[in-house]
Image 1: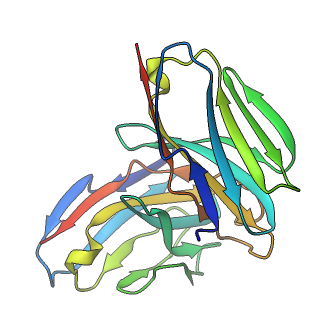
Image 2: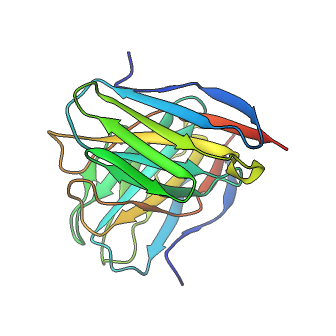
Length: 114
Length: 110
């Protein structure tokens, strides 16, 4: 692994189903982030983690949960998917959560909820 | 009014042209980022600025903190520069969150 990976690449999901999007980084970065990208709205922060064992809510956290059991992994779970969660999801990481640290992005997961 | 606004939303130019993409913001910031999103979806960080100007190859980014404005310039544009360019600011009162612009879609025709 080099950098940050996400799985699956894309997924079509029935409404009401539970889904976990996976994110793994091998850069030993402390901070990790989940964004969703919708046309015309730019990236919106869902949840973040400043360091392993801690998480926080971003701009649009409702309907999503995260965990950070270790440094490398930051899964995003949709407990009961709804069509409005159709989006492209990006995971990112940075060395620190502080000012101006460069964020490195995964390739994204395209999720469609029917 | 969005806190970070980019202009233009869409830009089509001929190969070789000098390109300027603008970003204006309304909050106090500690840093500003320019990122590139390729047609395939991948996002790459280009610059991080807190003052002045930075240059990398054919890309130049400038920022005027007093005017709350930044520009991204591309010299001698090439079709491979076609992408969405995104501006994001790090608010001065936040430890973690970035405020994102909606992006500028650039198409360079051969």
